[in-house]
Image (cartoon, rainbow, N blue to C red; front, side, top):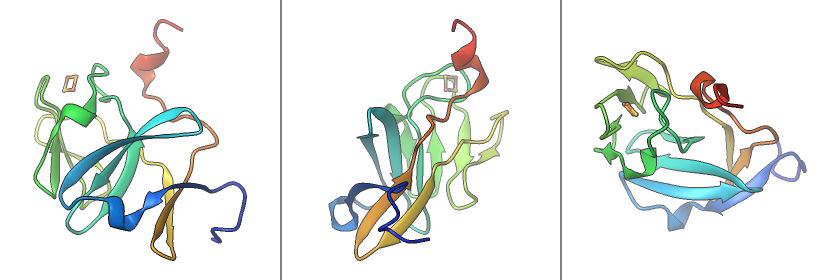
Length: 119
Ligand code: FES
């Protein structure tokens, strides 16, 4: 992988990211959420895989992300795998870190099945 590849879009500088924090951003008009965990960083769709609540308003302790609507949880350390009663993993965009910057490949918006229900 190479950051000069045009299929990668720059999201932000790594220095802009606060520790253990959620950062809503957009990439080419696609709303994403950068989950800046203590041991792992993920870029995910902003909506919850359950009923599309915004995960930007979720709770995050640096390891586990919790949707505050119905309390589904995911392990960020394990790449968005469900914890407890969550029934679906988080979708994750491909990311690349180069020269202190975070890049993301988001040519196609990742969506959960429920988001296509009324399409
Ligand atoms: S909408 Fe997120 S857990 Fe239900």
